[in-house]
Length: 138
Image (cartoon, rainbow, N blue to C red):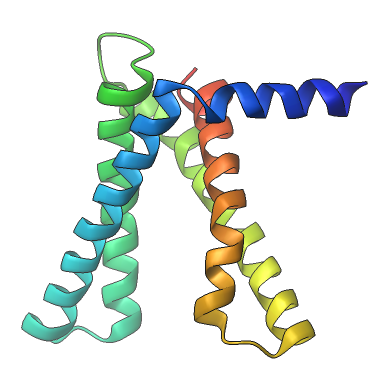
């Protein structure tokens, strides 16, 4: 019974305007993070792991502000100390789940991780959206 309610809740959220706004923010973040990564890597010649870390942190902060103001808007004032740690926990949780699933899928199928990542992406999007909406930015 609880699983059925969870599935219905996920279906309602996926077809909401709020979810489409969230996806738009995600696409914007992907583009912006890629630019930051390339600038750090090519222009400033920062090691690729450092460049990735800088772009990831930038992406977390960018999406936090935009999701707060444009998608979820839980209150008028943006509160970094109150909500950012929860937001970061959601991102880290989905990152960990993503990494475990990617490792398992690569080990099991020996397929290209680049393409397998696209299979995992919908789950990561739902985890982040649900975590942000019902916990971090509630």
